[in-house]
Every structure is written in C-alpha cells, then in structure tokens.
Length: 210
Image 1 (cartoon, helix red, strand yellow):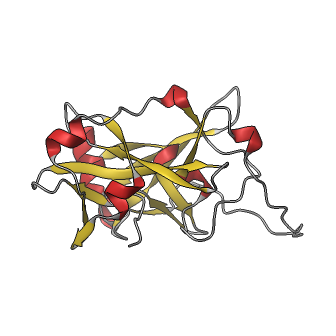
Image 2: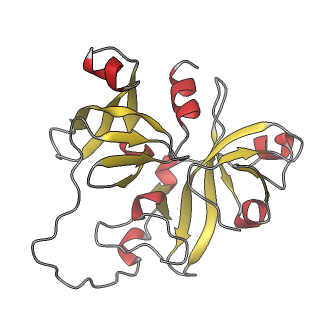
C-alpha cells in the first residue's frame, strides 16, 4: 500500500495520531527504515514508526490505520531532530516511492555517503519559484488560499516558509482572510502556479489554534 506524506493517521483502537511527516531513508540498506509521524494536538509529539507498523496498515477513506494502539504509539521512540539530517542538495529521491527529496530524512552522518544520481544538464529549465499570489492546496488537493508572503533566511538565503492567506477570491482581494505560517518542511511540491502542502488544511489551521 502506498503511504502518502501528509496522510492522516489513526491507531487501531480508533485514536487520531496526526499525519505522516517524513520518511527515514538508510543509504546503506537502500530502503526506508522508518517514518516520522507527527501526532498533533496540544500534547502531541513526533514519533518514529517502523515500516512494518505503517506499511502493514490499512485504509479507511483517506486515513491510514496503524497496526498499533494509542498506548503503543505513545511508547515509541521520540523523533529527535539532532539524530537526522536532510539529504544533500544533489541527492535524487528513489523513484519507487514517489516522494520528493524534501520528504526524506537520513540518519545523522549518512548524508555525505548517500548515493547521488548524476543528472543530465538541462539548459534554460528552471525550478518553479514560490511567489506571492500563488494558489495553495493541501495534501487532499483542496485549495486553502494563496501565498501572502515568502520568508527567506537572510544569512543562508534558504526558504524558511510562507504565509498563506486563507479564503476565497473576494475575501483575498479585500485583504481579509486568516493568515497561516507554513514552514518549508510542510511544502511538498511547487508547481508553476501553485504550492502543494503535505498536510490537510484542517490539520494546518487546527494546529495554529491548538
């Protein structure tokens, strides 16, 4: 079963467990060795879930039902950001999973050893740029608003995230609409005229008010 980044997750005893946030890739074994699940909520945390627990899950609508109870999920190892690092910029994500490179984490110290696939040089082809006014869709494909502001880290010039203005066209033209800060890690895909996020709109806006 394909596990989508941003997919809502529930435990087998019916408790909401947040969403799938990242896949952990091991360059040595050349496979996914875990998933980061953000449990959400006021007392939420991020847990590392084994592939066996999540890939053996079943679907109920859009939800992924883990082969774990809430108690078992709470007892799993916590995700520690210091133990992992993003892939190198020239790393090419495995095609079999169809996840973007930004959807992966590598165990700390493995990034330099990660296999890199040489890319053919392509002239006059540029990655889509994030700009103000772009349409924003959540992980379910629902339009949730437009990009109000692009935030860049001044020292590194790396993308920090975007500010999304929620609402329909008339609401946005009038300057109204709720504003939502979206971190760069929540951005899944950048198309020429829209952004696709890795979480649902309900999760994003609900997290802001949690």
